[in-house]
Length: 122
Image (spheres, rainbow, N blue to C red):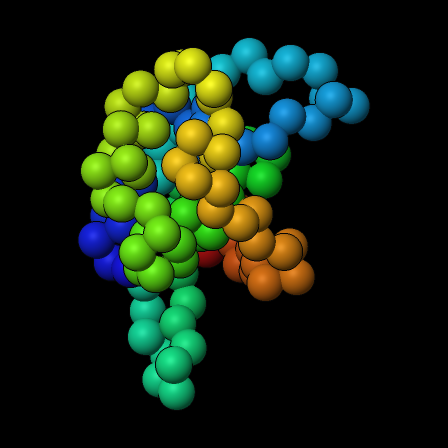
């Protein structure tokens, strides 16, 4: 899992890792930066994935984590993940391109803190 997670760090076009929300209109820019992503072993076969990013697209985090899980299971190759990040606009800009990894449920997400550039650390 850590190797798959590391592939997502940095500035990438996440066109293949989000779902379009018709109520919001078209996405203008799908480029985002994941500043840090870490897989934390919590024991007993459980883990947590911590992310620090500059913003997320609709269902992007759920799709990224689903892809990491499928890469760990061997259902998606690391090379496929890297290619999807390097060539986001190829043929079908969707997660189906990578062999249909799951969009994980929102009930597993926890937003802990939002930082704004103008704020000091608190």
